Image (cartoon, rainbow over all chains, first blue to last red; front, side):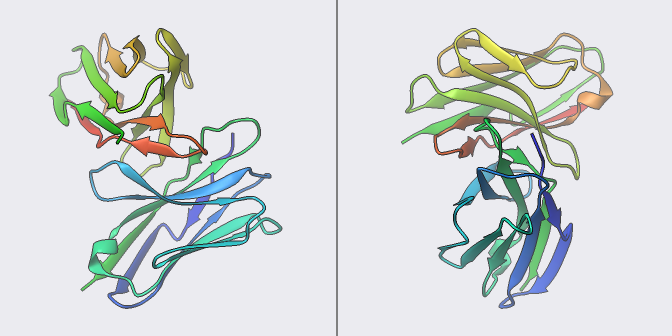
Length: 111
Length: 111
């Protein structure tokens, strides 16, 4: 199973700005998911995008998937201090339904 | 609604001592359950998964073992802890459509 690689590793922005983080992978996927982890807590599922989808929205979240470039991006618009967390992409590929997680992007939103 | 409980939340254990982390799921039957480990600054590593009572699959060779004595109970154990076993342990269950639902995690520090 493959692991996605998030970029950047860390991101620091001001409240109200947009935050963009990316995930790249190497081989074809079934779907890609984004999870959020507050410090010292479990991960929370945010959004899933299937390999035949290009864009999905959920509230202030926008996820895109470019299978030709083997990459996905997570955009958080009008960020808030409460968005401070680590964000992980998780990839399901091949015959496995168990997603593999990357190392995450640490986002800090300054009030 | 489904919930997942992990305990203890925090544990400090000496090298060579045993370990038992417990996870229970409510509101679902015959869940697929997982144990992940998250070392500091790293991604999630899948340690074990179980598709039913007494059925355990190990993803990586290590000092740990897992058991599933009841349908909704998953236990992570060690007979003798190593320093390298320190980390954040997450229990999770597969709630369908490739999505994983996580518990709140257990911090283990081996001293």
